[in-house]
Length: 544
Image (cartoon, rainbow, N blue to C red; front, side, top):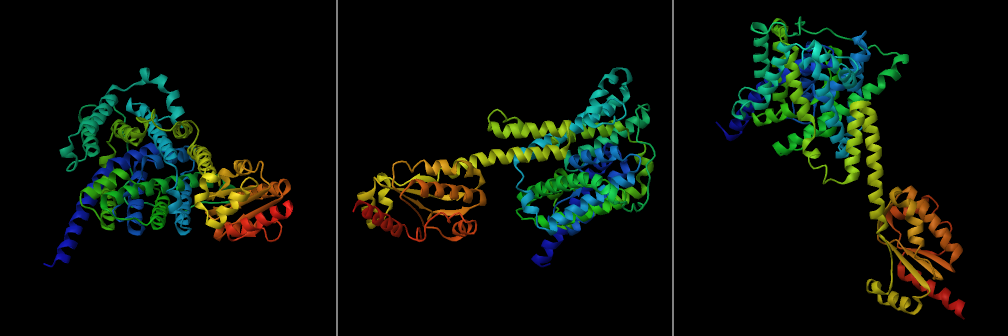
């Protein structure tokens, strides 16, 4: 057998083992996420099958395993709650979310989604983890899930002492304990969530029969749910669809980065978004909940040997086979065991690593994270992300502005060694009357507000001003307007004003926006030496 054939066989074996292992982990999670979403356990399985298969087949991260995730389930739960009387509308929103993801990929926006600040990602991921825990507190004690999200769950906590089902609490506590303390050496062969699912279900069937169970679960192939979109509903549907698309994209691409770091490969962001979008569209069409790249299932798949698309596709095929005959068995699964599993899922989603360093992290970043966290839990995800991004951009603009303003420096006698001999001689002779300011780096909206006052502050006492742009790389519109104000003030308050060294993008930006129009003809020079010679002539004529 050749080395190439042996390597291919090794990859196939790894993909098969990885796909089987990922399916074993995905089964209890898909059921749990389906129930938590309000669409039912079979919707969780359908979502895992559709997203898992098509994202693997058409996506850009070969080793990634996709399916329902905590963040996507939280959003879907809110969608189902609003459209509970007509689930067709809820699944239409899922289809629209998938279509938006495809659009993101076609427009090649994948790399920009990766630019989401970590403080915002940490805040909404931690918020989603808290939401899952809060929502699952009621079924953990044997009560039905309350409407109204986390606030609805909190409002029903007062009912727990009177309505608590001790058998459900026993099952939930045991399930949670098994997942937390399951030996690591067994995790690879028999994942803790599946062990908890089996043990909890057997307890409910044989020893604790009063614990609430899932009940009848449909089996067989899904029916098609054709989207129902009208102009009247489009505006109502587009916002939650956009939330699903953004969250699913961020969740998937973050997981892709994890897969890259383990496999030493590089994913295709835009192709991954297209694959995820197609998977979510199919999920909506067959009545499944939306999904994204699942970090835990992806890591397990890779560690089990999965490296190609085959593993993710096989994971979905195994789940499909189970769906065709799983109904009678899944009907006996208690809600409490799913609550125990999801409690651990919610706990793991919380960004504890960032939270434990919160006292040492920059205060501005902590503020953004906490605001995003709070809004995620108590308002809604799109408001949380929008506000988080705005706050983060303000903070980033502030330090960018401070950094850019450091590039505005006067050329004094201490820095004459940076000049040519001719330039230094002119400055030695007229240095008390010629002011020269070097502008180094890029200048943007971040520094525009203080640009004119900073650069203009070096003008006092000089008869001629020279602004040297030879080390300027880029200038945006806001900075160009600030430079125009600077030059107009210099022309009005000095004998003469020169600009030198402009080239490339910086020159084009100032010329196109008319920022140099205030200067007399000939006062924009390519070389600094020429600007100094002209300044010296003007001063000499004035002296004569």
